[in-house]
Length: 364
Image (cartoon, rainbow, N blue to C red; front, side, top):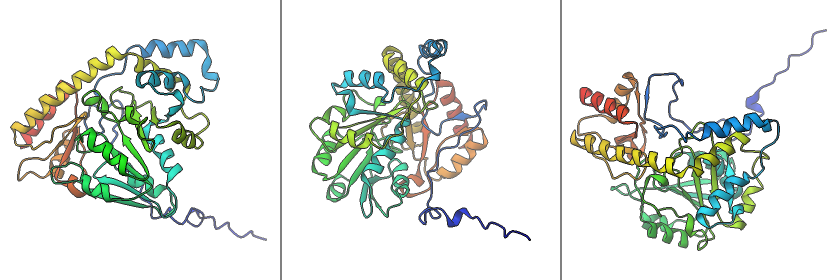
């Protein structure tokens, strides 16, 4: 007697919202040994602190990898808290800043809620809104023609969460601190200042010190960009003790490993090396902008480690992106909204930037 075949189908088992869900689209990631010049995902072109090697060797020699990591990432909390005059418990250490964002959305966004953001900004925000699978609405407020936030329109919006990258991505444009704080003051929900690129702008631009004055403000940071640790995945979220205590309830039990914590701690403490490499990126940003503008590109002032570039009239941004890809040079192209008229170029080493410029000149 034959048994009836099991008609198992994942499509009938997953949540009804999932089939139509569009996941986040990351930048292209070629193999680690490739000769491709990679200027598409805003990684740091310089290696992280050389002190990491000794710190990692010490962890391995002591054999502590057999043990669980500190639940809170306490030492890293304390290092950051000391610099910003915060209570360590105001800092939630996470598996990259993307986990910080996910936990924030998970804690706040429920059925019928509205998430407000300028457009374009970090493209993960609308994905996160949909990932909650609760029927929340993502309200995108277009940038002005000069690529700055439309503060008047943003100020009229109501929602559970308002989020923006500061400085903004993919434009690289930084908004005045006073205008951002006025937005925070008048928004009735939580406001996220996503500061992945804050280290590439002027000192004191961060909103971190304003958390004490604005209980609805939270700030996210990452070690992926300025600390050159994109492959490690460490970030953190900062807010009032009350806000962070609620969000912490949702984090994974041991979300950041021992090696990750030690490497992040070592990198954060090596301030001299950090400032040296940061300065190199900023210097190269200025040089690359001048060179690209000399061949007809239009580029807003950038406060990040990338440039948002409009090619000269008659040159298709998408076509230029594809031609550079054929030459083993990766940049980023976004095909929607204002972004479709631009390409985004990560600041590389002087050698990488030189090859990029020479190739663009040849193509044009």
